[in-house]
Length: 385
Image (cartoon, rainbow, N blue to C red):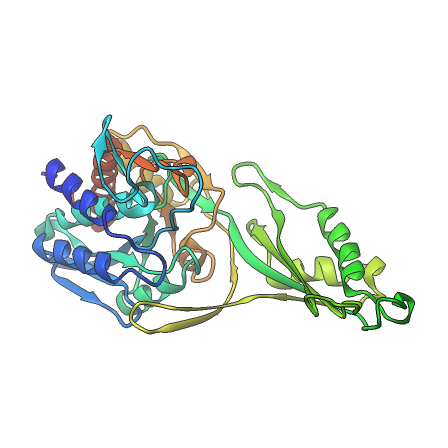
């Protein structure tokens, strides 16, 4: 039987603990304490800071990993919140605070939903992965968890409005650099202005015809910054210009093709242009440094996939009126499904519109329903219930 009050209390606890990417130590400790108290068979914190809890079945069988990240985005200055973003206050049937929807509510629901499985009737094991650094490097920490526990199936707890998600957009960080030739700005014709060259590149990128998916929406190129060198350019024509694009990916898009769509354009042949995927370097709270190419692929499962249909039937059995959907954002499934090819679904409380916003909130009934849904999925895969 799910303890609703204890679940809500635990969720409030972890919402009250600030946990930006790389600063998840305190919230991770609280999660580890809760897993231990609920009787997980094994609980540990790995070298990169993930908290991993395992519920072992009485008989051998598959491994299902339930993943939710512990880091959140920050609280930006500007429009004030109606309530303290770290109050964890319950008002109007909802829990308020940064991370309530993205995704400490889902994490708490996983801990309580999976922690209550009947071990004696399980064939295999259920793993809850409280992973770090997702907001900056999707899937990289989950890869570390799966390397330790294995995974035959994965459930990502990102906000889905309690729908079963069978796919999601990917994300890439694309860096473009034009190289010109410096000259005195009193004689610009003697040099080659890298910024003017970049303006031509940007015009081409903005005019690219990109594909669209009926559920994920369009692929996207979004310009996020532009920098010239030297800066400030005192009487000097800039010889370097760099821009960064956030590229939202659809299933089947590979890095080579994304870059070639820009670098192989004949109208840019006279420009010295370098196009590459960016590299991210981030350090976790344990001191581990991730150095990773920032290309996180999209993924898509068939709507008749046995894991998809089985999960859908399981949550229906738990009284949840779910259908099939797809994420329009990037998640840790970029690794589990997009890279490793492990059967993966998404299922979580709240909606995409509830995340990364002021006055973030999560309905308490959805929090409880998510815990019941995770338990039902675990029972379906591991032969219980």
